[in-house]
Image (cartoon, rainbow, N blue to C red):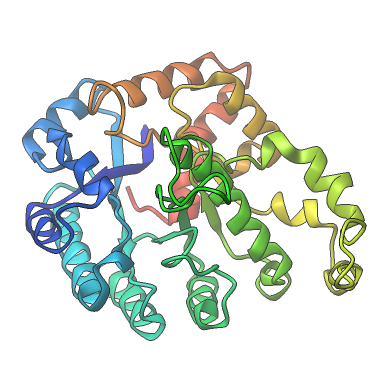
Length: 334
């Protein structure tokens, strides 16, 4: 079985409400141009192209739920209820869903995570790499990480950055969608670094965090993360960052190896091999990121399967990536 753990969908009720609340957001424009993002029949036809053994774990697509402001918690509940209905109605298609939470309300997001997992059967939660510009290691978000460590279910970490993050201090807006192409992998890497240096993994050594797009920049920059951050503080004059290294129980790079990653890399084989080398087969899950491909629903699935099938790995390792790791991490019953 091929269990695709990261696919985006927008139930019609959620989609319609989203259009009412943030009609001019860039990601709203993006998802509105992909028919199978909302059209379930078309979504099924795309899935059928990949055989009876292909399954999807569904996730509410961007924009981040926090963007809905005072309506964010209501949107999280609406999205999760709709997803739970889909899972119940089509268990042979969708063995699970990843719940959305509104982190602009720290108490509310913990309550909704509990409800979605305990009452609706969600197999994890999705959060973004920043909360309306605030870092994930801010103290108010700690209870959510505590909860997910206690429940022993994964947090799926999705990047978020917009053109408002300029590439240069002399400008107020990012150009050419650099904020997406290079900004999103940076966002993932920066968020992971903040969690590492906050001591999260010392507090919760068994917490499961799945980095979308196979860790962003992390695997490629293993040398800078390793020998580079072993020298933390060597470049800083206004504070003693060597105290951070003394506080941590491990080398910084050792904590980065504790993250998980998915194969949503738009069909890039070299990047996939780099990520597998860094995280290890046991921490990599099959994911396509459908339907954000140029064909609007099929190419990323096809290309990712082609890459995984072409890897010089054992069949046992291929099974782990396609199915075994997802079954274990998400505690799937299929």
